[in-house]
Amino acid sequence: MEPIPPMLPAPDRLERRAHAMIATMTESGPVPNADRRETDRVRFLAQAQLRWTDEGNQQQTTLFTRDLTHAGVGFIAHGELSPAAKGSVELPAPCGKTVEAEAQIVRTKSFANGWQEGYVQFVSPIDLFSDQPIKAA
Image (tube, rainbow, N blue to C red; front, side, top):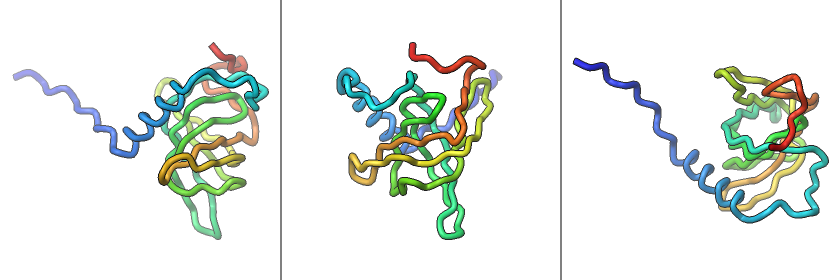
């Protein structure tokens, strides 16, 4: 009898919706000349965990990341997030490792029913991939 290949968990409905929205946002055209970011960014599609304390209660939510710089990560998330919330973000890194960084939400904006788009800034710059600064491809 041949071994049965392992089954990967099916993406949940929220994850499928997030990926579809990110694809739509990415396909919406070129980056405008008035791009606010001062550093190069790379496309970084992953799930990250954001943790913060709100009125003494530990909170956690999943961020669906869009792009990454050494200074922060762009994301979409389902549910309410408060700009200025401080905590930590755990990001997937190569080889199945994770990197945790102190972070603060610096911007959020509602863009679809129950979804927010925003940016999390790292307290100290990070580089998930090498000792060299992240550069756009």
